[in-house]
Each structure stands twice: as structure tokens, then as C-alpha cells.
Length: 163
Image (cartoon, rainbow, N blue to C red; front, side):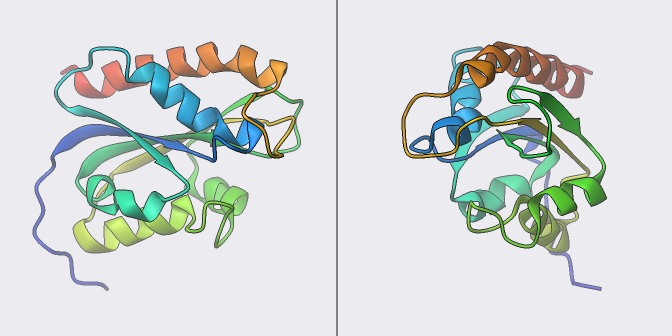
């Protein structure tokens, strides 16, 4: 078993926006966290644009009690379908060992836990993309899902931070 270094929880909840804003629907996670950053949050919440450099957020991940990630997720549904994944085996199979962001989310969570034991929980809000090709615009189905996902994450943040 890996040795865990002493840690102190800095955040009750960490929201990570994943994806590449230059690849149409893959930029969904970034767009959601941009919207979330416009709001006032309890002191225990941190909203980060991880983009495609998830490993650069390892310190924040490993000092958070709960992690919420938002990303484009291909699961075979209709474009714009929203998924809320909590089962870590399912998440691991959706992302594989290394995903399009260079370092997979499950690998980052596993590394963080090996260092500090945190986060305790992981939730993924995923939206089925229509187009993942060069471009700055997201498709209409994903655009319609954006406020729904933002609202669901907002509710989850308040549930996890208000005691």
C-alpha cells in the first residue's frame, strides 16, 4: 500500500472543467466552469478549468473531499444526453488508461488518493458530444445541455458545502 503523506482538506468540493475548447463539443467542460465561475460560492468550493492539463490540478484534487468533473463523454447516447456517473468502475471504463486529455481522470484520482487519501468521492457530469472536430462552436444539442448541467452541478456544490 502506498504511503500517504499528511494532508489537510482545503476544499469541500472541487469542480474540474475538462476538455479542449478548440475542439467544438469537447470544450463543454470549460464552458460549464466559465458559467460556474460567474457565481458566488461557499468558501469550501473551488471551480477550476483543468482543460487538457488535468495533472496540473493534482494538488487541488488531492486536497479536496469531493471532486466533480464535467466533460464530453461518449457513451453511445443521443447528442446532448446528460450523464451523471458515480460508479468508479464505469468511469474507469469510459476513460480508459489514458484519454484524449493526456492523463485520464481515473488515473489522476487514483494518484491523488495514493498521496493523501482524497478525494472521498468522484462524480462525473458528462454530455454526449455531436462534434469533436476543430472549431470554437458547440453543437445545438450540447448547447441546450449546458444550462441543465450547470444547474445540476450548482445544486450538488451546495449540497456538499452547506452543513
